[in-house]
Image 1: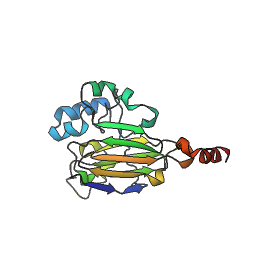
Image 2: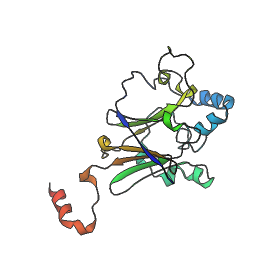
Image 3: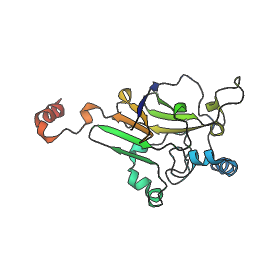
Image 4: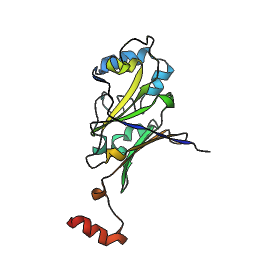
Length: 198
């Protein structure tokens, strides 16, 4: 039986200065060389949180314009080797992102929308040792957590965005298209004409 849980999508994370320490390629190489099995599952090739998900190194704490690319093209090398755990596409009414989350505790996952322009998917894979230290996202975040920040599509209605966790597709995010940008079935011709003239 498939269980599904809706995640709350936070609007604006109140923590200042998060993701201010960029992840560099040489730092990431050293981190992975010293990393354990969990680190390799979370940040390995094909993972949503891998800096190499899109081919070349790209810091996952920087917002990536995901919806400007077709997943079949951007992930072709990973898919041909069976390494991709991520997919995104659009329907007539929604933008959809699906991702497996190996090595990640599902209850640590958070989804935020930043200023209506960026979706932030993050969580901790290791708890902070000292509770009096600053937020883990404000320093070398990769040592304790993970993130993928994606630019939202211009015609996406971020206020109605939904995120789900299930044991079938571990993470699914749906961003509805603004109604005026939706493609309606041909049987509803009158509605299309009304929208076009409005």
